[in-house]
Length: 293
Length: 301
Image (cartoon, rainbow over all chains, first blue to last red; front, side, top):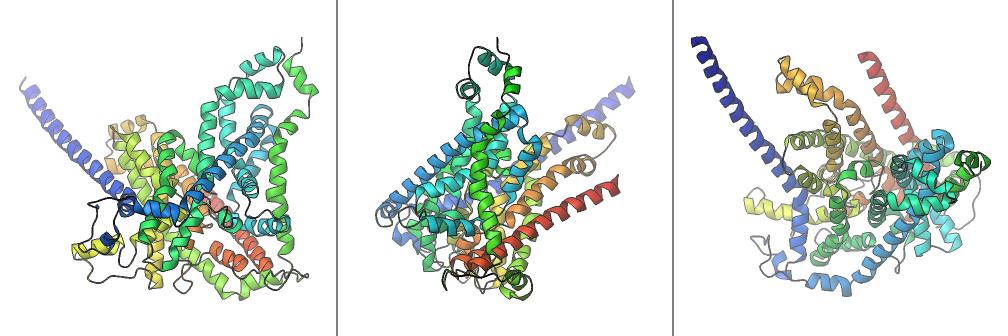
């Protein structure tokens, strides 16, 4: 009996200490994550507040971290003086077109890999190798060819390039979604006299639509973020947001802070939206190069 | 009745038909340009001189590999930027992933918030940081002065060493979230029973980290580092906006030098040769990495 009491005292003491340590551990965990959040989100916070500052706030000391009278005049200036509205629209149009065409082209390819093991695994490896290929190796010949064909400064030329750049990524993700799709449903449709293409479009697509949305969003953001092809192949009419932003760097390190920060805010908006929508797929998408052109 | 199995056999062309749109496009937009570029790399095509060109053999390649201090310097710069970036991204990513894996409430939202930098384009990341580094209006100098750490408006891009540190910092900020996501996924796939077993055997948290977490996470770490290594060899947009290669070319990466060669000097053939040297380099790097991995594994076994 005495022994039992003694033991339980030791156990409770241990438990207490254990709980204390756990609480300290939890505190440190959240502290560490708090530091990480400040480091990774701080720049965004600063850019947003800077874009809302008045001109006199830029050289105030002590510095103004949060403007007292936030104003949208830098956004207005960006949209009018720097034709920001046009370049924002360009980015939107290009990203939407590339997203749609990447899906349309990649879906049947993914289907032939998923259903018939087309290419016997070779094709999927080949696509992975393409993902490793540096864009700089492509831009030189493509620029020369486009120049000859006269399709620089042209939406179509860019959309074709982007579509092809995202095929590897889109096919890899889509193959995964298609493999999860039960063959029986599709076979049932085909026994009822449906052609394979119609089965793909009318039976499979509605069911794997969420997966396709994931691919679509990654393709959208990849086009939105792409820079090398955009800066070489676009002209004054087809410039994207990424190209517009670089025009603010000409004034040394102290440039047009107002408009530059406003353009960064607009340029990162889709990333914010997509990061939350695609949480579950972020690893796969990023690993396959879903956000890089 | 038509059986789908029979129908499939009858239509041998169907897989090709379904795959053909992609294959045709890849042929036109990737394979043909690559072949053309390869052909070009043996000519002396220079758009600033004219559109005439002649076969010059491997001259462009020998110039790139043996006689071009600018390109060789950019190879060195790229390595100097890659090495610390990879190490820091791996360590920080692992640390944050381990913290996240201990969090019980709010993990999805914290993860999504931390992942945002990785979704942003390199150009936007670089622009935000370029403004933060700004001499008079930048957040860093202003914060430093307010806290009394700095007493002058410091120019972060005045010396090559500090510029490289500044580039690495932005790169780490931009891509640590990717490493974190990959490693978090890896951590979550380690079965909890292994940790329970280690605890029963009397292992403290440190020991279970070394003998359970690390060995089981190794493959994920290798994959993550590999992907970052390949992507870092393409470092371009970040440099373009943040330093434009300066000061004195000390942050010019291979992709950036090739870009300048092609689209500033218009030496198209030479730029094509450089791009093939880069492709070769990346290929060798990748193979060496896998080979090292295999050697180490066979030694461990």
